[in-house]
Length: 508
Image (cartoon, rainbow, N blue to C red; front, side):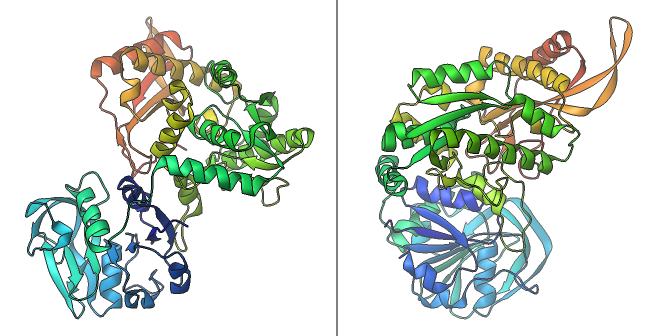
């Protein structure tokens, strides 16, 4: 069993980033609920425990707080933002609503030498995101660093390895964030590096063999990075006891079905193509709510797979579920689910197939690294993420065949030009959406009243946070002209400049 660093989840939008940064430093990390009892935590023999940020206030009734016995374990603890406030509140300090909320960059001043700051300058920028503040430290705590608006920006217990930071070291905006986390892991917690992808592949192959035995597995192959890498990994473990099912649900992009089939044949994957487009489109008729669309698509997928599995004699369903899918779908007690992913929250409560999800604890960049090691073609590894519900959640409102055709053409032009201009690999994800509105235009001296296409391109690492891509104006102008001139039914193109948060990457 790998010794982890445990990240207690209090509902922070950045909780996945914390876990990911730890893995980048070569140490295995796991996210667990904030209410996990001490006995369960000790079973995992953690190197350290990190308390994440969160949207609550520690002084409110029913605020999420960890088991107080945590602080008596002599296991190194790091509280981040809300985590610092939880430590302060539970150990006798005071947390109150701040007169000045603090969001964005702040200048940190290091006041005392400490292993936490080893090798770092005494002043640098950090990223704040809090409306409460610590106004009185608990007994036996001292201040290590402060900012203009946060006098207790970094604190530590004088005798125990308990630290707290008011800012977010896990986000890219914080200078030396990774270095501070490394200092905590290796100089305070004395953690050992135990996480690399070659080892993950070996462990996963053995775990898959143990779970599957001689049974047969059916896989939902979409042609995306996640399902393809999951298939390649499982195929190495159980060979021809695995069959890939590529479902054309009628919600794919232009030419995608043919492209994906070509990749699968090149990799010699045992797979079967199923055309269920009529079924999916019929089920989606008249449906406008995005969560209902996701639910219908998820359930219909499972129906198709269960039908195909009976012919193959499969007992398990392999899926390319990733960590962000699980966290966004699950939420925590008292927090709202962001959205339901079709391959996590969209599954029926009763399903005849047992789930197999070997990538469930991985981030997208880790999956791509595994794909390279397994020989997955670069063309698949480089593909931008594409949601399981496909174009259904990029058409806002009811999904109609006419709208699918409009969106396919507009999206194809956008992606084609990104590749021509050498921009495709520079953005994390790009796509077009079709809006449920019409606008007035003039084309050839004739008044038009036609559809609006939105273009979306974001820069990100794992999809948990993202910023809009600053694509050249000349490029956007060129794409706009091509879409309006070539796609019948469109007379206006807009570019989405929203970041995540507060927006999500997909529009639905």
